[in-house]
Image 1 (spheres, rainbow, N blue to C red):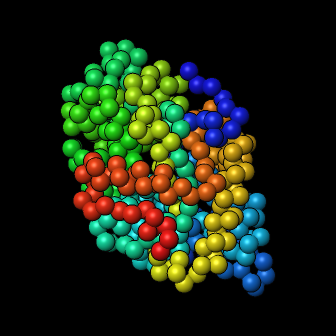
Image 2: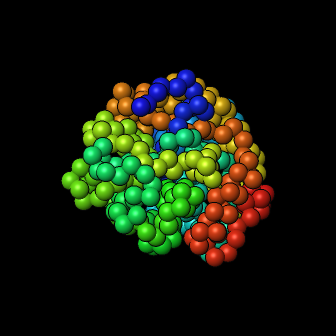
Image 3: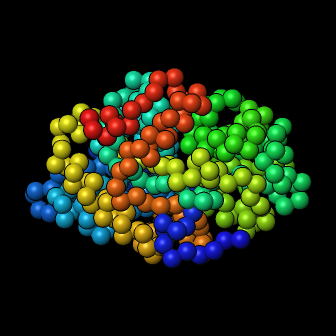
Length: 333
């Protein structure tokens, strides 16, 4: 059952990613907050459009960056991998998306990053494993030996035994706490738009999904939740963050501070569901009805380094990365 909540902070969640390129790519689309005449510093933010970066759109729409001397352009990208390429090649100023991809690049030494802001944190039922109501699967233990649809790997290579994105990392941790080895489940890489069809046809026995696909699976198939992947050890887990190259942060500290201040204000404004709900249809393509019902996570108004360190520690403990990452160092320099 799904309850409408008064605020984002009391709702549950959904995950996706975003970036900031300075150059305009042919495949992208622009949303621009024009700066004050002559004095604004240009910043291009490349994103994979999703619920996680809704406050960024609100900040541009409401002129919060412009008020602080920034001329921010949002560029859409098809994947986190494309965002990271834009960031590391100098086409992006800041990138926002799944923490695991950025921390993986940092751990491998393929990028020197600065964590600018925490973007989106998990809430109950924001990530879930769902099955058909007549599947016979009612407990996490019954997922052993079953095929579960997950998103295709993007930055971290696919592995049947090791998590490769935020969703599989969170689900694996919760399954382990329930006494289920994640390697006993067959993770079937599936595009998000194809998950509901794969579940309906029996191609998979369950799906690991986020919004709006959780809501759609419930409405279209009567799907039921078997695992709440944002509970227990993953409760309140940071999911998505804003990053720049460390070289940019060192060279442009006033611009970084201005970006942080504007985003913090937008994320505080998004504690009320209305601003988020208003931008979701054009941001994600969901209907206005779905935008009113989807489970939302929380948009932090400040960066809690210790919370983000939870992600890096889980990645290291699970084998996603072989070198530990200090989030404190990422946030400070």
